Picture 1 (cartoon, helix red, strand yellow):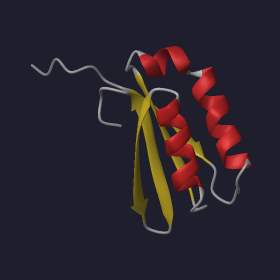
Picture 2 (cartoon, helix red, strand yellow):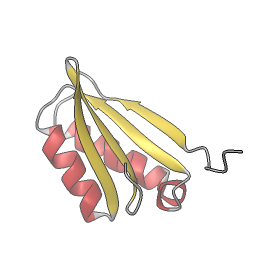
Picture 3 (cartoon, one colour):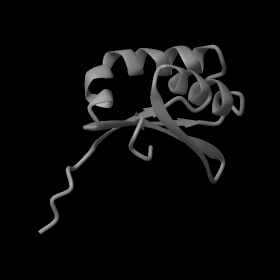
Amino acid sequence: MDTREIIETIDLNILGQVCPACLLVVLKALNDHEQRLRCGKTRLVVRTDHRDSTRTVPESARKMGYAALVKKVGSYYEISIGKKDDPA
C-alpha cells in the first residue's frame, strides 16, 4: 500500500504578464496559502512566459524559506514552489 501523502497543487497561470506584476501575483499566492505550503500539503505551480520571472520568482520564494524549481515546458516556464526540505 502506498503511504505517501497526496500533495495538493495550486496552478497559477500568469502567461502574458510581465514583472513586477508576475512577482506580486506569486507573492500574494504564497502569502494566501502559507500554512499549507509550509507544512508540505500544497505545492504552487506557476506558469509564465516572462523570462525575468524565472529569476525573480524563485529568488523571492527561496528568501521566504521555500524550495523552488524552474523548468522549461514548450513555450513557457514552470516554477514549482513548495516546502523547503521537499523537492519542489
